[in-house]
Length: 248
Ligand code: U2P
Image (cartoon, rainbow, N blue to C red; front, side):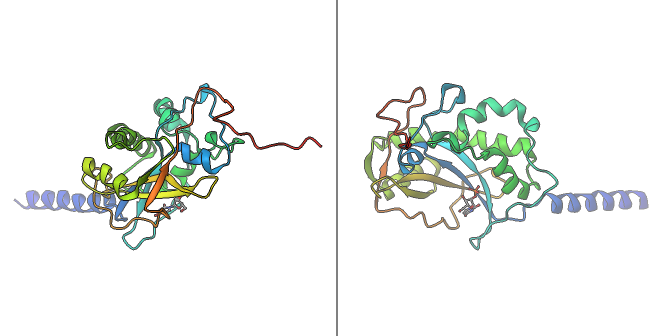
């Protein structure tokens, strides 16, 4: 009997320890995607990436960011477990298509090593629930689950340089996931506000969509432009405006 009590105590103790080790110490996640067309427009020109970049003209993953309810967030939490591409080798081809380097859309190209940055900055702060592979895999799973471009198109909101109501855009997404996202805007070459990033809120295990405790001030207007998607196959005069280079 005494043995049973001791064993039960040890099991209970190990459960308490392991659950406290795996409990997230942040409150929720933003899962953020960006619209490549908005990067091209704001850069006063765009070099569509070469075909070998495998990038698609669709919303691209920016990252999965742990957040605190007070509007702050942890960052760069662990220098001892920095990004190691060999840990995600089976995911690379999907990551290339859905999580293209930010810099491939800019003109001239400005590589930013987005994957490395996202793990080192955000991923290292969520190791209570993710290792490197599951962090990247979870991002890809949400990208597969949530076809934001299609959701918007179903509501008549298309990347055609047209202007759409900010609330209309949020509602189109809310109708599908149950909660309104945050929207971040930037400006096109004429200073007009345009759709740049979409913030979807997830619970602190990144399992379910949740109501956003708050969303960043996205500096949008009540009507915003949905810029055309850049073509990925070739650089033509209409899609690419190279900055002029002085030869003198
Ligand atoms: O705003 C600049 C960068 O800080 C990170 N960020 C911002 C707002 C927020 O609520 N949470 C958060 O993590 C983002 O980091 P990045 O991965 O881009 O470096 C954001 O872009």
